[in-house]
Length: 89
View 1 (tube, helix red, strand yellow):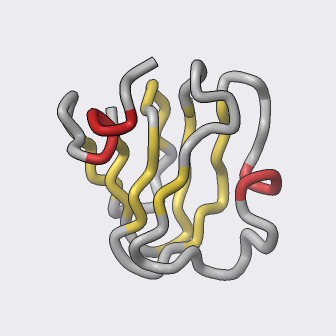
View 2 (view 1 turned 45 degrees about the vertical axis):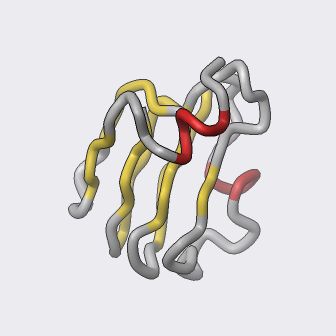
View 3 (view 1 turned 120 degrees about the vertical axis):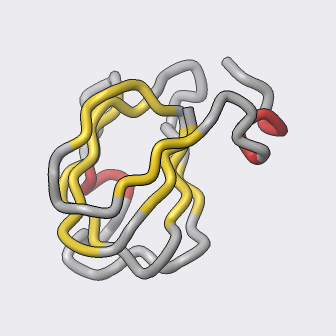
């Protein structure tokens, strides 16, 4: 697991997702860049968007920082309905 300072500074890089196409890949955290509706979010343990966002149909606010429950794991899939996020690798 990366140290939290590595995540905050995105030392391993980022991927900007700003469309409604599904993105699959390993990423350690999500930084919400603008008010964003996340329709799909999965981690390695099988947790989904409903576990991370209590009302997924309502936008996650800009500035939100989302990490997996188990810090040894990563997210592996995200799909947006609107907005944009930076996936922190």
